[in-house]
Image 1 (cartoon, one colour):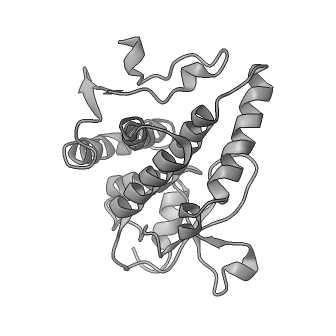
Image 2: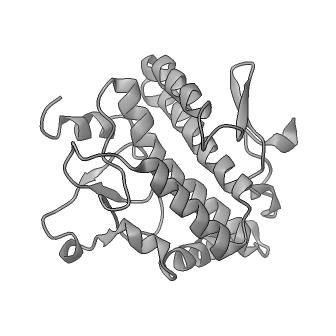
Image 3: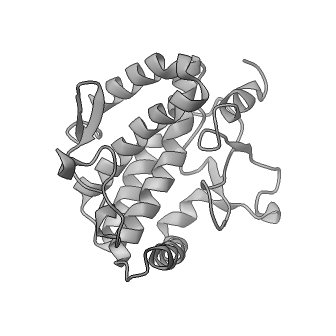
Length: 220
């Protein structure tokens, strides 16, 4: 693929796979550097918003760390889905790194992400590691839970393709399995009879009436 064809191909897979092009002046267009998420402020604001939303839906109090885990899972999904989609399509992975990604404040839906031009070296594992540390130190979440959220997002992207492009599921599954077999993903979950099962819990069951996720260890 040439030019921005890879963006169009990823966008066709669904909103979690889509990446906007970073404009010439991202700040003027309302975009913020991804590295801002590592500083106090943005994730606290997003977690407070999510906590209030979950409490309103559940009709009961929601712990901050539960809301933070939910926020992390959504953010990890936005970072990993384009990579899974690119692998399934057989195109180069998008340049997702702390210094190439921009985000924009939003209310609902997937995190809006923009990336700079293709062809730059990737740094996704490093970005994920920094985010795991940020959520762990900022919200009292265990790294086991957070890396479990990362792997859950990885296989969640595969599940998302079943609806939009089932023909890509075998390639996406092969990529996810290979990724799960290496650090820092190794040890976070297992594939049991073709289904990913994590070794930790994202804590969503602690939302009043929240129930359990499909890959939750507590249901096994």
